[in-house]
Image (tube, rainbow, N blue to C red):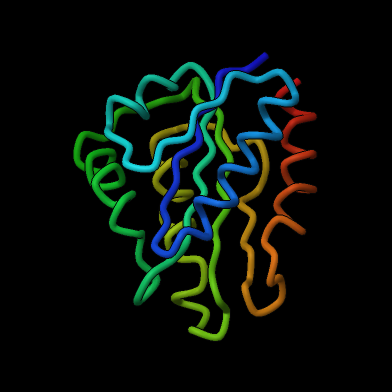
Length: 151
């Protein structure tokens, strides 16, 4: 059983819906899971010996949603190295906005976690709303592969 924090960046609720379903699947698999919609640095750092999932939509010019941005900025500013942390990132986006903006919120978080020396359990999953109307169609199989590495 793993302790897993699910940190969500959402504007209109799509990423939140994905996170709730992911948390339910994790709990069904016997993991201790908590979803954070307005996370603080202390919430995130509490998982430095465990695992986090970041599920983020992308706003505007490829930016991190407002509810997740304070955590991103705090991590960037304080830069706590977390070499024992394992993580996964689900980036939700729309490729019609252009390659430099596509999945930018999740992409930025993935890059920051790598700089903080956290260990990815799976490559970042970029979900294109132009291709996958229901993000769970690709997120659930990705999660299955990730869970095999957690066990």
